[in-house]
Length: 68
Image (cartoon, rainbow, N blue to C red):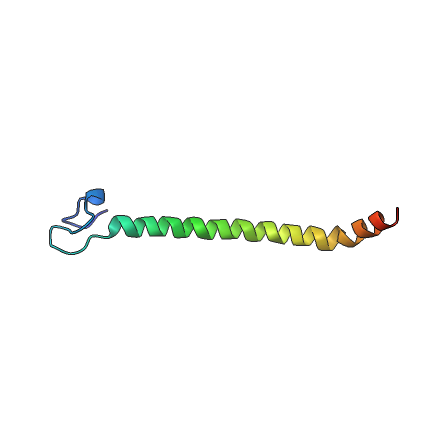
């Protein structure tokens, strides 16, 4: 819900009271922050999976590859 005196996206510079209306910009920043945190979580899970696979099976794969 928007504060009284604002017009949503049209309230870019000032509200009816003369105060700065930064609601659309702050909403956009919050949206990108959430997306960034989600992206970091996905990358972290992927890195953990790759690290597990390499540490679990890496020695066996290297031993198999060098034995031939």
